[in-house]
Image 1 (cartoon, rainbow, N blue to C red):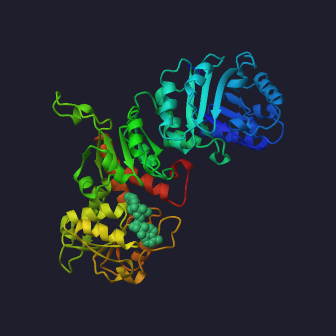
Image 2: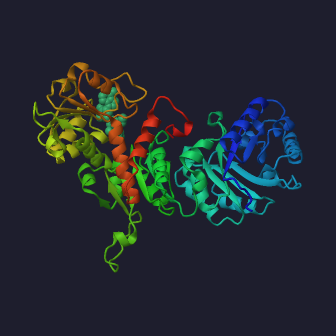
Image 3: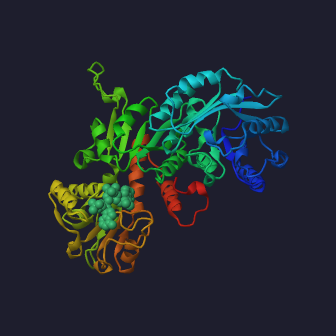
Amino acid sequence: MSLVEEPICVVIGRTRHRMVQQEIVEAQELGARFIELRLDFLAKAPDLKRLLEYKTVPFVATVRRGSDGGRYNGPEDARKTLLRQAIVGGFDWVDLETDIADSIPRFGKVKRIVSYHNLREVPKDLEKIYEAMCKQDADIVKLAVKAQTPADNLRVLALLKDAPKPTVAHCMGDLGMPSRVLGGKFGAPFTYAAHNKERGIAPGLPSYLEMKRLYYYDRIGPATKVFGVIGDPVAHSLSPLLHNKAFRAVGLDAVYIPFRVPKGELAAFLQAFDQLPVEGYSVTIPHKEAAAEAADELDPAVESTKAANTLIRRRREERFAPADAPIRRKENRFAAYNTDFSGTLSTLFDLFQLDMGAGQPPLTGRDALRGRPVLILGAGGVARAVAFALVQEGALPTITNRTAERAQRLAEALQARHVDWAARHNVICDLVINCTSVGMHPNIDESPLHPSFLKPGLTVFDTVYNPETTLLVKEGRQRGCKVITGVELFLRQAVGQFELFTGRGAPIEKMSQVIRKALSPVKIRDEEAPA
Ligand code: NAP
């Protein structure tokens, strides 16, 4: 029998006993089988009996000091007395910081977590600290340190790989998410998750439902393949939800994680995470151009747009065709793709059609785009992918953008027209595509076009997908336009990525359901909310 049967330890920290009791009951109902009570959160002296009354699963007692990220600010002697009371009082586990662990002896069957916390950084001597902790009387050694760079995750995970004692180690903060999720791959006996994420228990601590139903933490093991999204910000990306549900729907042993990577740090990040390895990345703002530069194979869409939203790791044998060919000294062997480009085309091929008058079949697919005047609003990343895709199909885009120089630059690259933002309503077109962020949550009462521009016969394609029914989409429908929503593009670019990641067909229906449920204003369960 292993030391810990349950791979997720659910942390509960509330100021009132009644709330702790309530959360213990709720957590157990949700499936928690291992619970840590943060006694330092209680406003009054802990009444251990009252809390233990509700115990049906193993409980950990923790009384964390302020310097370790906790709320306890009383005398140290009183804290140790409380820990001893918890040990003899019926808790199954006790968490003892490394500096006090030797002063509190083992008692009966109560198991010991010896812990180290650093809320500022990953210290230079982390490995030494860990080595010393492994010599202490611990059933589990725990390290929680604050990541300052994405690569800090790897230092912490490296400790797990050859751990001489069962070890739980992770980085705190939003840069630290990879280590929290990947502990299971490298042998951590469990990870931590909050019952109630709103309580601010530890920086970056995910909720139990996220760990269980978004990352499927209990299924992560040594063979699990790792994928993820690189961006900054990335915390609100829908991609982890979408890809993890898709992996699960087709029964793949894979996990998809958000990687917050600050601007300018992509190359260093790819280099550092090469050792994990990560098999494929979605790439979002602000790294799409840098991703195209970092890869050493570019698909034609990336060649033309100079931006990539997908990186796929290439195996050495695939990369270097003749086995005896000299090996290029490039550590990151990635192929870059742009599924915003391919997704735009498949959206338009599937959904754009042009009425040809009574008795005539509508024009669809390539035929509908060839020679078609299209107005593109915006000149950012999405506009670029959309515009190059349209030009490839022989459409005639006109670019307009709030910042005129950007529109001009994009139009020059495409050899297309551009007009001033103020003149956008004068453009005659059959299709208008909004590639600005106007109308996106939370600015849902804004539209990039005056309603009078919207007439029957015009197709309005809004790439904004949150919300799906933007003001532009709503007004377009009201005024008799055909409408294509950003969810259609979001779905298709994600399907393209899934197929590149896995080499197999995507569960499109499932992915469509997941996106629409996540974007629905009525959230049923919080694991379906954007991660
Ligand atoms: P980006 O590179 O930052 O470009 C943003 C664009 O929006 C720029 O053209 C910017 O104009 C314009 N803009 C911003 N605020 C504006 C305002 N108040 N009035 C007029 N124009 C404004 O971002 P991106 O990656 O292209 O993404 C743009 C939008 O596309 C996102 O917000 C998202 O909703 C949508 N999107 C959809 C998908 C999908 O799969 N459906 C994927 C990615 C993005 P300036 O140049 O003047 O700043």
